[in-house]
Image (cartoon, rainbow, N blue to C red; front, top):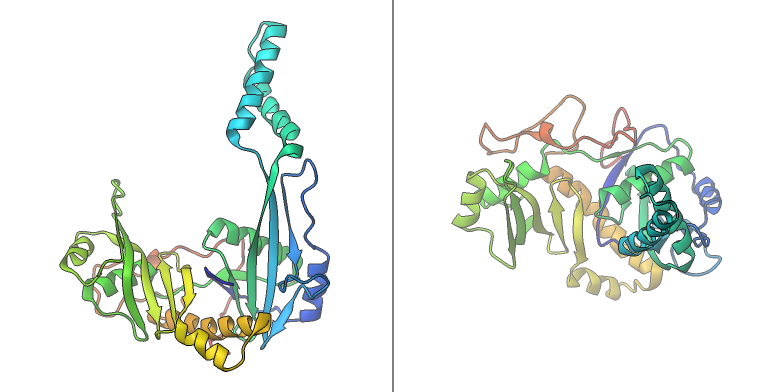
Length: 334
């Protein structure tokens, strides 16, 4: 549960109503793809047990799971069938199909092949923290996150979401940490990072299982390469890779957390949820604080101790326009 994390701020004006959300999820239950249906998405029981709730409440946290099924038709198979139909048309009419007909043939070929295609399923965990007004998705793909958020906004009345933005761009902050060798309070820098040149060359340097407090790494930073991801550990309790878009990837709770959970008798689904949400709900504000706090409208900040010419948080990617942000974000301890 939660190997990746994309974090959204819930806008003001939405009142949490678990019963209403459960009813809304029930109207959009998962159904397998039909014979000629290429993709189907819907909600399933987080516990994996039939007739269990679609919205699980554990310690004040809401957990949901979106399941997606796709029929997989390799492009090479579609192309082969299109070529066969095109040859038949050419033999019959003496003319090769034009661009418009070629597009129609491709759609026809896909329609013919879908009933025989294999299906693959995937699921995305959704975690909503009403008190903190945060929503977290277990995905490292922004395209997938946008898809899930769009479904949620259509489903839940009054829900508005925007990506959490920080005063400091994660890329600039990570460059400062690597360049100075000073990790933010509560965090340690691990042995993995990726650096990319911002110019047309797009040159990339990757380090894996390699110390990062070296002159070589600092020279890359001085030369203009910016970090796109850096591995971190938080309070010796959780490790992850922070990306330039503030996604958390490769999330892993460390042994001390798991042993503590066992000692406290946390078992089964509710125990797992309690452990994961209990750790991550503390990690997120610490990470936001390490990046200068949550961005407020019309403000920007610079990394403490960074060169004056370093880019500021104004260079951070904006929140997705498809998901309206709240006018005023509540404090983390709201």
